[in-house]
Length: 242
Length: 57
Image (cartoon, rainbow over all chains, first blue to last red; front, side):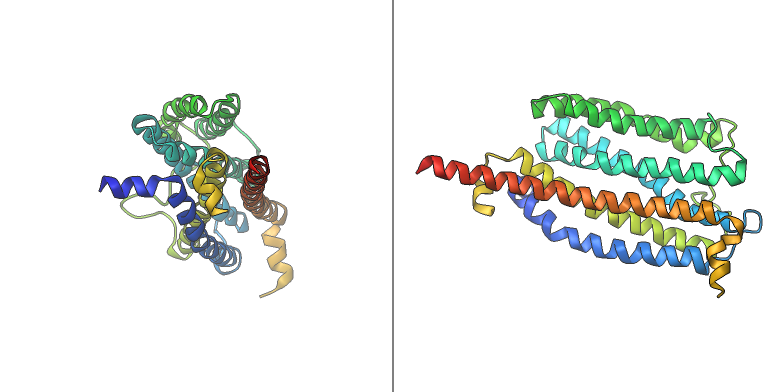
């Protein structure tokens, strides 16, 4: 088990494996996102209250979900790197950060565009919006902290602590709509009894989320390969591989 | 399906198409920057190795 694990986490093996995996994420991602966009924009019926503006849901909710999902992936990878001193885990956390930051930006921007016609304002300082904005700052702070160190090992350790401490923000974002009074509507999909959204509107949402997940898989493969190349610049395997 | 109606998005065209356009833009930019980053690292690794080889001979 441990020999297998070490082989898996060894840079040359991981580098090759990620290269093989990337297209298996990339092409399904493209197909699913295009299918969901067509379904959400054309096939799904207009909402009885919000009209066609509700279609923003199909890019907003998956972005928001991915912004939190990516943060948890990043924090778990950073924790693994910190506890077991696995460099590849630190590299994975570093690779996840820019992906997460772009999803967080998308969640905020599409939410703002949706908020204008529905709430009458681009922005309010309520719990959901503010905690999501803090998430964006956590990603940006994480990346800024990394780049402020010349020594990669010190950068790994310091940024890992920030990533782990910041994970407290994820449940705050999720439960903010229940704990505080906010303009943001409560969750309509993740309710256990029955989602308060019609199935014909729900299917394209799930397809889009799946597409975003595959997109994340593709992006982390590519960025992690870049990270490995940067860190292994003097390794002998790299000389043989390229 | 009426194309005019579809593009109009029930009067919310500006909001809906901006949201979808922005999402596409960010996803494409992320795709492009991940690819570029990887190929840059590969080029610089290759360059370094060729310099090392020259130094050795």
